[in-house]
Amino acid sequence: MNSTINKEQLVRFINRETSLSEDHQIFRWIAESEGNREELRQLYETDRLSRQKNLSAQINVEDSWSEFSAKRLNVSRKTSKPLLNYWTRIAASVLILVSVSVGSIEGYRLFTDSNNTKTLVQLHVPSGEKSIMILADGTKVWLNSESSITYNPLEPRSVNLTGEAYFEVSEDKSHPFIVHTELGLNVRVLGTEFNLRCYPDEAIVETTLDKGRIELFGKNIERPVEILPGQQAVLSENSLNIKNVNAQLFSVWRNNELKIQDSSFGELVPLIERWYGVSIHLDARLRDQGQFTMTIKTESIRELFMMMQLTSNFQYEINGSEIRLKAK
Image (cartoon, rainbow, N blue to C red; front, side, top):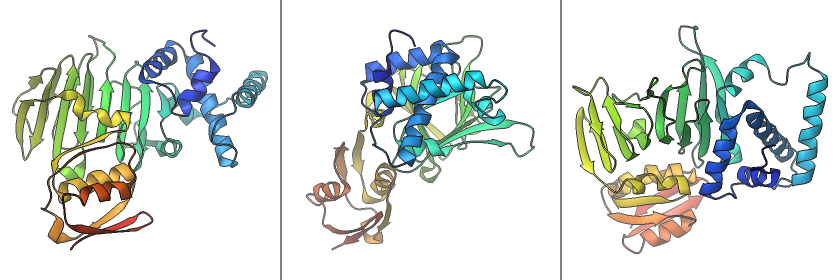
């Protein structure tokens, strides 16, 4: 193992206990070699198996590493039996999944396109969870809840996004990185950092640039448009609007923060559903009411509703993951 990354750091990384600077250090370590990626994949597998057997939720460093080492030694002695099957090898060569919640790793799958000519890799993050992934070119992608990213392993710098993601794109002037959406706006970049939001139920595409430059193009845009750091482009009903914003506010979800700005009940409910992984039935009388501005961090959903009741007159009923919001 690289001396700059020890096994305790990787275990803390899997358990979501590392800082953002440590995450970046580990990302660089992952990108250094296939051997590093294999070590992390094996440790993830050890953790996953231990959780399935209802063992401790925290990885026991020494036991897990011993198990990993034994597995690795055993595999090296049985070269006639590959560690990963063919399909998994395709994905593993271009993707290392870094899950910030155990459940999200189950959304990883491989399939062929409608013409049965291409093998595609897809990661889907369910409601209430988030994930981080790193592509073969070093590009890092944070995926928000209810989001999917799909791509051809042979073309890893061209991806399709549904939902919301933050991209740190590895620079390659000869090969632009392109993000496609189903809502008529695509993003072309060389090396940059930006947030892209394109949930189908919102009927808009919103991209916010932190660093570098990006070019927007697509069937619903007359001609390519370039935006600069601190700008946000919103495509709605075939109309593209660009404005200056505090770009960092639109990617704080990566740090487990949800910022709400002047939102009605109707606008807020889908955000709450994704954030907490719940289903909310909203009284139609409340849909256009409310003007909520807040930041959600570690608050329970009950605490959230109690805060909302300080400025709005409504009742709530919580039954497991089913919630009803009613007008008084």
